[in-house]
Length: 304
Ligand SMILES: NC(=O)c1ccc[n+]([C@@H]2O[C@H](COP(=O)([O-])OP(=O)(O)OC[C@H]3O[C@@H](n4cnc5c(N)ncnc54)[C@H](OP(=O)(O)O)[C@@H]3O)[C@@H](O)[C@H]2O)c1
Image: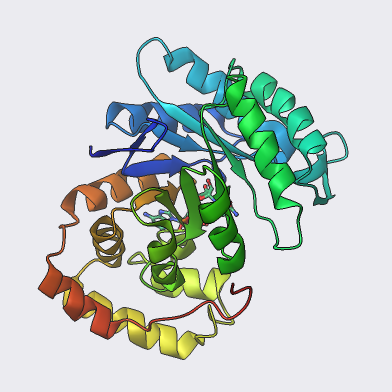
């Protein structure tokens, strides 16, 4: 498995595991997923304090703790959302220093770790007091409470600010052959900041089950592309390339992005790992050919 190192020397496997959709009510399956992931060389696990109002961090932390002596891995979590763990409700957005310094303690405890490998701001707007947020991350890093930090954002103006004024080592954005808007961000982050591509399968749409996923999750289409257009686009791509999953992974490998794949079963993870291993690295002419067939999108709002 290819390992990409962030500028803070955090090792991140090119195929990584997003924990958001794990079936937390079935701990045996969750442990089987994590154990399989580790066994095939996956070493980056992505969670957030908000996922299942803290429960995701707790379950993931408990299971990963069992494997710490056997494997080296990196855990990323996120901060910035206010939520009530007891009432299980989201309250609002808070990227203040006070909130970050308080929240990190809860995440450390839930994850059962003494420091956080990668601490990401879970969104944010251009109106936030971004310098205060950066100060919070920098001071946590200096104290050794976090080893590195990043942001999760699809706002170009926010990304531009953090890329220029902070030491973020990662940027997480939805990135795949359909949602290819981050092509615009690659110039902003260059080689210095690792792109963590979330939604690499567009929540299952980029699999051979796309018709089923389309009617279940995306009846109204996605990103302004209606259902009929999507069926047309996806069936044409599948006919030419055989596997939409391999195609999306090849596209992301070409851009040296980390593929942060979410799964809700071990079966899905096994299918995806096989597809990742089969996904060829495209050469420049294959990439140009693919690019011509994609519907290239741009971020319409929140531009610098
Ligand atoms: N703002 C943020 O920071 C943010 C937002 C979203 C996600 N994330 C992170 O990114 C990770 C991945 O995001 P995502 O869940 O949107 O990505 P994704 O990998 O595109 O979608 C995951 C979902 O796709 C379906 N799927 C996966 N493999 C499949 C297969 N082989 N066959 C059929 N369906 C399959 C499953 O849906 P079903 O469960 O319905 O079967 C799975 O839950 C998350 O876990 C989280 O860590 C971050």
